Image 1 (cartoon, rainbow, N blue to C red):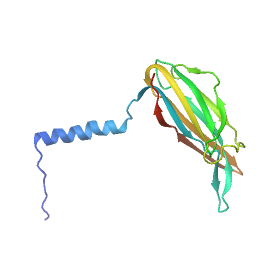
Image 2 (tube, helix red, strand yellow):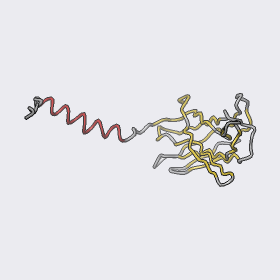
Image 3 (cartoon, rainbow, N blue to C red):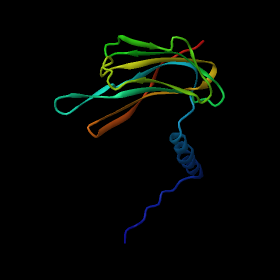
Image 4 (tube, helix red, strand yellow):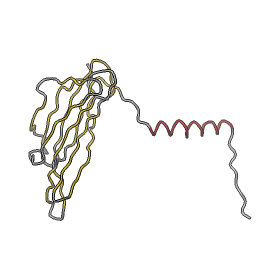
Length: 165
């Protein structure tokens, strides 16, 4: 009959294990709340993806989504600029500041046939707030359908600069 091996843990070891497994796991499961007074965010846009052995472009529509996640405070979108694969500015959106109230959202639509951006297109979004607020969700949703085949995915924005007043 095989022998059972028991590991002895001190009371301190048990408490440490409990704290690590209990609180550590819950901390990893939930994302931390990030506060900021403004940021510059880079958002990749895939206006086309390549498929098949011949690298045929599959055209996609793209929707830049900017969502204020703060429950009590507004944010101001100061710019959303669309660039092509070579970093050349294609279009400046929001000629004047756009105020997004608590939990409000806005979007910019790039049609499926738009090919100026290329495979490396991107948005640079700038936003600010009067005081520290929950950071907004800024992402691009790509979607397309052709001959009964559909594709959709999300490209999250990435903070490239914290803007302070």
